[in-house]
Each structure stands twice: as structure tokens, then as C-alpha cells.
Image (cartoon, one colour):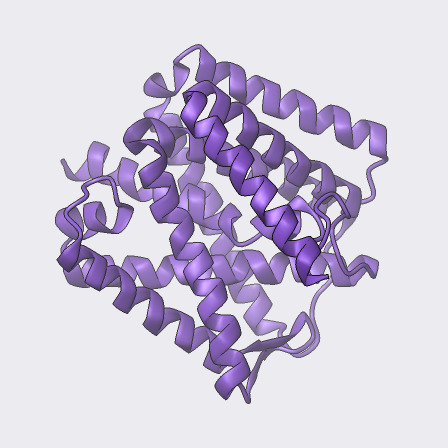
Length: 282
């Protein structure tokens, strides 16, 4: 099992690295496949048949990739800011609902599941493309490091000190101690990054420079909360339909939705924050 996970991760890393080396459109195309697979899996969880789910996912990703290819994102700043602001608020509503119903969970209708899929996944993909245009792969990687850092930190801190379950009816293994560990480690890591790394394309460096250190720490904590919201949301959807993995497309890892759930709220939020600074603050 571990060998399968390592091989799959190595192949994905090689494909991603090659796409970055080839050029921006290759990277955007590879990510379109990843987000399209995520959307397909989410729609299937929502009860949509395989052919309709594949058609919806393909159409949405082709349309957005076409917008990127045509250079339309530069003229969509206000639209992206408003859209991502609404998406970010929706994710916060979901997060507080998850915490409020952490002991007994809550039902999500088929319509709610499908509508959230066709809204949240495209918003995340468009945000990733916009971030890529703003600061190349370094900016995108720095945002994803927030998600990965929070996930890894929460896992190990939870295993070491976890006693109080965060949402036992949704994801029994997640604990408040793990979440606190994620907050502390991520904030300390990116604070040190700001001190020792002068790379302006790093998202947190941009955030601290333009919003101030204290506000930046608050925003970073908010992003960690959103990453937890995305993780819990997918766990709840899978629990409602009684499955362990969103698919078996990634041997040893489950599906694309399993790997990208926590990044889906964070990408729109980071794009919104940067757009807010550019369009409103400056």
C-alpha cells in the first residue's frame, strides 16, 4: 500500500513538473484534468450518472481553460473578486455548520451537493489560474503549502496529543489538538519564511507586506480554518453515501477529490484577498 502511494505521488509530481517546464498552457491543461476529475467525483457522490457527470465536468473545465487561453482573466478581476467573496462566505457558513452539528452531522440534499460541486470546483480552478498568472508556480505552490502544512501538522499533532474530537459525527479522527497544532505550525512556518525568504511571489510574504503582520496572521489562521472546512465537507459527503474514497483514480490515494478537498476553499479565498488588496486597498 505504501509503495503504491509513493509511486502514484511520484508520477503525479513528474507530470506536474513537466507541465510547468513545458509552459503555462500545459500547466493549466494538467490542472484542468485534475479539477475536472475532482468535479466528476463530486457529482458522482451527488448521485449524477457517470456520463452526465463526465459531460458537466468536461464542459466546465474546457470553458475555463478557454478563458485562460484567450487571456480573459485579466479583464475579470472584479468578477473574480465578487465571485470568490461569495464562495468564501459560503465555505465559512459550511464550516460553522460543521462545528455546530459536529456531534450528530447534518443532511445534504442531492441538489445542494450538485450545486456546491458546480460552483466551488470551477471557482477554485479559476482562482488557481489567476494566481498562476499573478505569480507563476511559486505563488500557487506557496498557497498549496498552507493547505498541505495544515493537513500534515493536524495529522501528526492529532496522533501525538489528540484527545478531544472536533467533529466525531463527520470525521472521528480529527481533533481540536490537531487543529491547534496546524494553526501554530503553519503560522510559525510562514512567519519564518517572511523573515528569511525575500521571494515576493510567496503569498504570505505578499500578505504580510500589504496587510501588516498581525492582520496577515489573522488571515492565515482563517485560511487554515477554510482548509479544515473543505476536508470535513468531503468527509461528510462520503459518509452520507457510505463510501471511503471518492474514487480509485489515484492508486493508494483514493480519488482527486480526496487529495484536493482542503484546497478548494483556500484557492478562492487567497485570490479574493489579493484582488481585494489590489482593487480596494491600493
